Amino acid sequence: MVKTINEINQKIREGNVVVVTAAEMKEIVEELGAERAAKEVDVVTTGTFGAMCSSGAFFNFGHSDPPIKMQRVWMNDVEAYTGIAAVDAYLGAAQLSETAEEYGGSHVIEELVKGREVELKATAYGTDCYPRKEIVTEISLEDVNQAVMLNPRNAYQRYNAATNSSNRLLRTYMGTLLPNFGNVTFAGTGEISPLNNDPEYRTIGVGTRIFLCGAKGYVIGEGTQHAPPYGTLMVKGNLKEMKPEFMRAAYFPGYGATLFVGIGIPIPILDADMARFTAVRNSEIETKIIDFSVARRDRPVVRKVTYEELISGKVEINGEEVRVSPLSSFYMAEKIMEELKRQVERGEFSLTAPVDRIPTKEIFKPMRQREIKVVKSVMVKAHTIPPETPIEEAARLMIDKGLNHLPVVENDVLVGIITSWDIAKAVARNKKGVVREIMTRKVIYTHPDEPVEVAARKMEKNDISALPVVDSRKRVLGIVTSEDLSRLIAR
Amino acid sequence: MRLLLRFDSKTVREPVISRTTLETGALINILRASVGARRGEILIEVEDEKVKEIEGVLEKLGVDVVELAEAVQKDDELCVHCGACVSICPTEAISFNGEKRVVITAEKCVHCGACVKVCPTRALSLPL
Image (tube, rainbow over all chains, first blue to last red; front, side):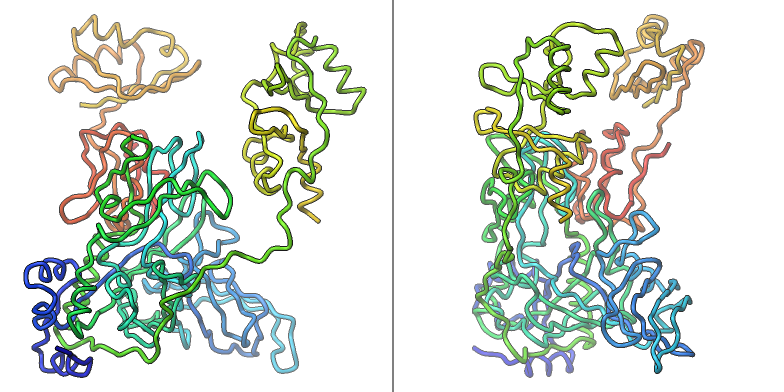
């Protein structure tokens, strides 16, 4: 049995189309089987509502008098990219305001969709045809010629879940991760997410009409970083037609601005295979839990996990029960599926066949880099002292060698560190004795193969100016100082 | 009933909780305490019938007492029910209801504010 998209659209026009949500479809296929379900059901609506940094909007502001060729442009002090025609610009959701805290491009987009005005400010170098060098004005969506949401990467089919094995709290784009595997966060809506219901991308492709933040939008191709089964979509839609309830500006504390994007995609049930695809269950959708405490591209995999386990709210890691937070809204995703279902039933939303397929195989490559500079290349020999060294002797060593830090070593193992500041404090308090009494015992250290950026961030976060370099047995191999690193990174 | 007790540099050195128990015979459950050298805050839970009596004793001892009738507040205009806060809450006071909306169980909230700091839409706030 084969149905065509034209036949389904005919039913939509006649008002006798059968539409169900992806959540409902699982039950239907279980009850009737794929063959019968494909006969009964014409369209399955899917939905997702997740925070996607790879979102933004193109604007054409119209020409001022005298005209300006914008060289730089800001909307509510959030800079947009205008390295294109005179009054065209792209505002990215993740771009941060230069003046307001916790405010970014996503917030500007949300304000515009809510009907508010934003301040437009631009500067230019001035040309014969565009003499104006600056402009400040207010604009709303009504005032601009075009406002087109264009998101390079949305609707992730599945995504790696996140956890944190370290002993400090991490604030990431995957939300706040508590220390010592304190929680797990994940993104995506699993079995109701669009691409999971069409895993071979038979009906979702270039040109597919979709529900995008309350407006009709289109898939314009595979998204950036598309790597099936971690597929993504590039989408566009008219910002002027969007509804604020189906999007939300967000700010992940300690990370930055992003946009919750509401997407719904209707999937035509052309045959039994499509019915089978749309019956997919969370238990069949697998992803990995990744340890975000390793600030490297290739983060360690803690374990494999299914969306069923993640959605249950608890997963097991190393024999312990760990609580889970979704970052996509299942409430909003269901609302979108229901809304899209209503629109198709009422004949307000017809289906499209893709004009081209998106790749079913693609690899997500790492960046080609010149070289990764590691600590080994910048560390210098460390002068170490035993813990029983008298404070005065340590002070003399620092002066003689021009050092500010002395790692303290006992039985070949790093047990502490003292700094010139520790000595100054001891002197000020008239404290005599050995360094064991004044050393810092909880030493922050690095390894020879750690990238210098990671070491620099450690110093910055802990407000310290040097890190002993140790091997896996905590034997001191050298030391790196912030002066050495800043010289290297600045270059 | 939950009471937030605030101590100044004088009262912070006094054993006010023990005194209150001895004077009123009330059982006091300490939910959260942050007591420093010069000031402090303790969140306690007491039986509803004894609230007034306990408040009287504490205030006599010089402690500033605030009744916490409400839990952490959620602005449903802002909340998108993503659940980022759910796994952060130490007392499991935040959960999803049958409609997959994020809901707060007021009786479990200890006003720690952990959820407030992680909310991506700034929908959460402490009532004080």
